[in-house]
Length: 258
Image (cartoon, rainbow, N blue to C red; front, side, top):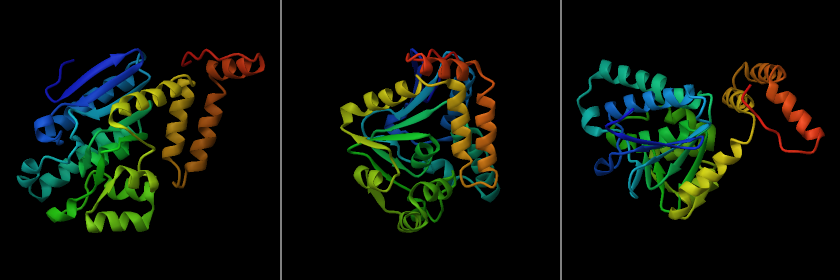
């Protein structure tokens, strides 16, 4: 499928999604959010795709935020509809997907851009990346999950500071506080993301999906039950049989996602 605001390319089992609005610093307008839903829905349903790497076009920004011109045109009801729609079809949709998604943060990840990166399962940042939630400078608060995911990732106190001051973090600061997993030189950004995802793709796909679901349930009332259910369901898979057999035979397992 062709997109107006995204570039997609599949290499072996990895789908690369590039937000292609470089002149707008890859800001998330309604059309881009809609295309992201379509692209991720297709990726999650495609058995030939094992995982996704998402990045921004150009060198300046992953995503510099939401499209302010669109926000300015909204009334209260329109803002609620936009936020709920974005949560359901993009941010929560990515986080709760059945395949691993890695954000390759190449430059600014601000507002909705950082919220998009936080919805991904792993974040790799370029040394020149800067991240932040500056919504309070507009008289707003984060509306795409920022208050919730940031608090889970870096803790309540630091989340308060970051959101209330609207200050940005450098890549190294983000690494220190656990907001990103790795910081690399700009030229190593995609290779690092690829290395991580390739390693994940050697694991059992159904097990990966179960792990994603269980980790997302951490802290919920049913978190332990989700883990037990996932663990139990894995026992009914061919991949579990192959994995234990390969271990006992001292060889690499050949997982098939069954």
